Image 1 (tube, protein in one colour):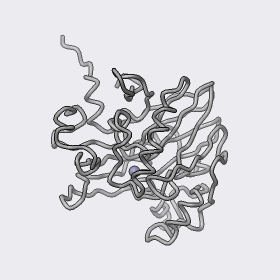
Image 2: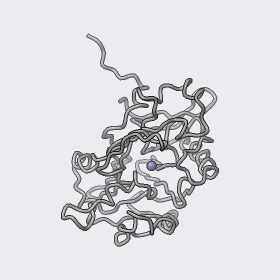
Image 3: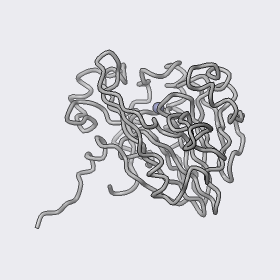
Length: 290
Ligand SMILES: [Zn+2]
């Protein structure tokens, strides 16, 4: 009989499924919606073909990076917060004119149901930023054809993100539900927002504390675990690449501190992890065994 153990590298090139962990009495769960492929040299313009010759473990059969699309459910007793809402029920074919390969969402509400939650039970939806792979389900009409999917939820957006984005197509419809939040604000028991900028004008991370551990849900500060080894590599979608890289250096150092876990929503099937040492430099060390 052969073993069915999965080679750890497999997780770098497939999207994540449902995963949960506990921080004291707070439960955090990755809520899958879908995935997007990224052409590696286009997504991370600081890399070269030689980079990917040395690191084929990050590339799928078509030579693309694999990024998960989804959200993070935070539950405390009966209360529930959702951070980001995936891409929504859409799919796009690979387009050679963009840095992306194929992109699809659609599973988020089923994933929430599998975790025992309906959209009406979400008291707040918080956004790391307002790109469409994070606002997908929030900008869908509700089941009655109007209203919103998360009918009872405040939609929390940082002040600078809302100031920069509120007038955009597809985002303006959120306005009646939006409550702006500020740096350091506690938005849910044990959950604080911190504004980083870099990726977008008001990009935010969420620091979730419980049981003596803190989890940093770092949004799009990092798109691929290879950036832990190379924080100088900004993503093509970072609106201020220098600021993004500066922040990433600090973030990677912080993730290496004791009692700290990271959550990278786009990190293939390694969304939860710690930063450890790999030879002379830092490296992403995923939690769970696949
Ligand atoms: Zn994103």
